[in-house]
Length: 209
Image (tube, rainbow, N blue to C red; front, top):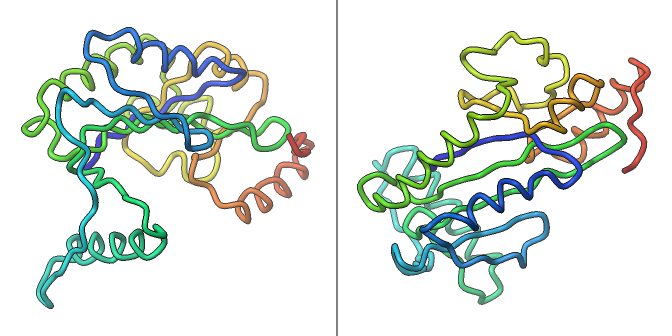
């Protein structure tokens, strides 16, 4: 599976995450053409591998069948544009935190997409370990050692459905203490509407950003 690291940041402090990657000896080629996302391709570690159609047998595992389905879906909606095979391309995919409504933000997410990372791209695996160590300098707000922390009330949606830690950069940690809420970056618009109705009942500002 891809290695995913989640963090909280507000008011532009996600730049600290981007700057960390930009300052490393192992540098990625940066692509910012996708809204609210930054993709780093580590050209020195391997080429960009395009997605190819996958044919699976009837007795293929559920994982293989699911992957084949999503590859087929991607290719159908690609309109002739090449799509990268993220599992085979040395990428770091960074989803930036977004302000959704009032005091409601999404978390940020850093994904080392290649799998298995350690054996296929060992230098990128080293970068992953270094980034995790750096992020641990910031406050732990969710994880095995903070699963029932004072911040649980403010971590909504599916943000607590993962095993990985969530670290908060300083402004985000202060915002949590000030009553701001955070949700998973993949939350659907319909779920945001439901959540905002619930927050309004608590007297929480959930006006459009």
